Length: 226
Image (cartoon, rainbow, N blue to C red):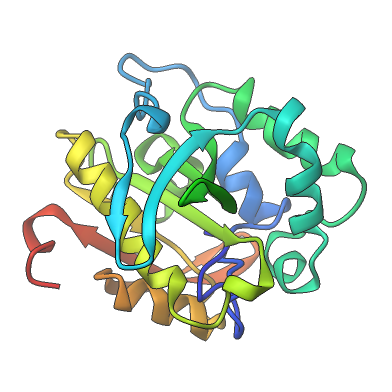
């Protein structure tokens, strides 16, 4: 998704998030409205997760407040390599608007560590997303993408810590979700490593429109074992 201590060798973390191109399209492309498509209630209501590095929580993106910050992150070369959203504010704004005005299966969030905005997340119902065409989706599968915006927070394992915390927030707050899904670029070794460290299980490689992805799961039934 991206980004992570991961999302690239330095964990641009720009955890693999899809490029606006196919990869990004996997997340923002509109699908027919379905009953129960209110995907994740609101991540902002999940509360804070206590982690070894501080209290972490999610807030839904508000473009009028967050656009400048996110545009700066998207123009970081390490982030741009995986998100492909470098450019003027309008590029990032269009990407956000596609989700905020879309069918509700994808929610863009800002991650705050001890109150400081430091990461961007996309939480999405993978079973309602075009990604479901590429794997055996189960009802309420929830996917995530992560991008750590500040370079000083990359390359020190923070991505894995936050990925585990957010995956657990999903499972704690979404009782019908049995697994959290990730599909980092298989060539993004730092990202794949971060997901593995966070308790995700590698399942398979799959060819998505513009990347060869490592399909990974963090399963409710195994969460206390990994």
